[in-house]
Length: 629
Image (cartoon, rainbow, N blue to C red; front, top):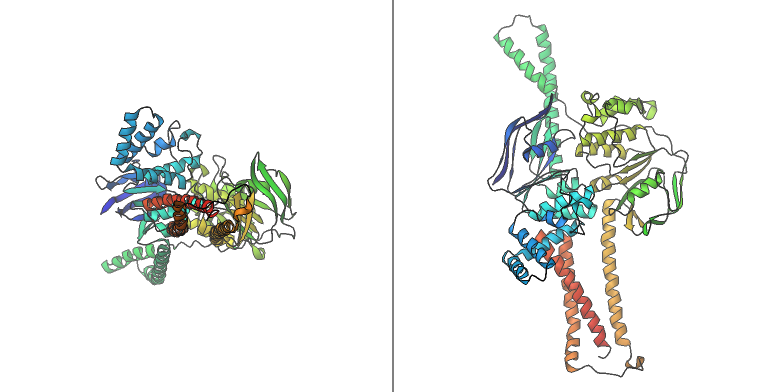
């Protein structure tokens, strides 16, 4: 069943054509990602599909009665509105019931209103829906649902907008960069949630693991055309490579034939017969094929940077806190030449503060940071893409340096470096204020690299960069011979580049983990498993200790025997605790499997909490009765 049809869609800005005569569709349950280079119109395409009316020509047709929700990159909320009211703003029967029930709870003296709201909750089965609402808000770390939206940061507002769409569960979700402003745990949860969702999805994202897990099709926008691949991200990469190989072979054959035809044309007299005219016309089409370009995104250059000395950067008893909040406590660390370090941790645990201390813009509360004399730092931070109005793109780079030195005494011009980062010569004299957000971020990154640092710090470098430029950047960084620090929520990026990881756990604790992002996730899983083993062992020990306590241990207490009823209760408690433990393990395994649908996961999560509380209660009762057994 077709939900969306796009027919002959064309959009241009002046002489620049973003796309032309695009035709494609989205079917029920299909999960499609739009991929394209920055500036090629991904977000513009989503806005047009959602009805902004800026297309030059073409038609967008939604199936009748299909519910559509759109997650934009920037949301425009009423700042006075509460989070709870915003996420339940859609007029569904469940939302109306929950809002009425919440209002009735606030006015307990109105018994009739409460009874009516309670009945409405039962009639619409809104109890399960309420659990779903609270689960989604909890997973997205929206903790105070009664807070005013005006008190939230930009990232928190984006999470509220995402929560609203997930709660509404429309027939078709249109999502523009849904993983922006989410930490790694949220991204993994959202990935699983969307993969199991019954909604059709059309999205733009640069998160390649997300594309791999969620998508059933990839639509690539290239050279103003659409190429659709019915599979996930790895399937897309495989089939695109095959397409490029076939195109390269076709171009190669056309070039060989063109040489023959060109020689023939040059030898002909000006007056031509009909056959000669047909052959000349065919040559024009042949020339178009032969002059096509197969884009290669690899960046095969080796920059000659300043050599690092034996002393690079050393941290001695480093500490940082803001009031009562500890960021870092007693951190000792010495950077080694060529190491590639990833930094992970929940938002607010101090990752960016740590980077600011390294570059000297933030003072430690305690300890010392010692930087070697040969260190040349380059720091890419999230808010750095600010350029002087009226500057041309090439001027931004040449203001830093005309050339970048390469190994073996070679050098590369600023224009050549721009081309390596997929800025064609036709763009070099464009005003920077006309660039897209992703293009500005890419240019800003180049200004850092053009300074030729040997100690490179990248704070969320993958935000707003497309998957093509990410491949170029990764290739550059893999060849980078200096020290590299990366803070990123891009799991693919971390897995590919880093060799060990600093995990900011909060409360000032920083853990050094050998390995990349996957190693970090394994560490967390092993840690949870070990904690459960220790808890189980402690409970077993407590049981044994309770059995060993003699009745005479407390001379003030008379030796008592259990009543018949208590003895029966005591005899059944151990078996009941064991059964509850088995249920807890089964629930935990199911929730960690990533195979549950949203409602089923919510139900099991609630049951897991109840089982945990029941086990604690029964174990406490068992210890109480064991003293007299």
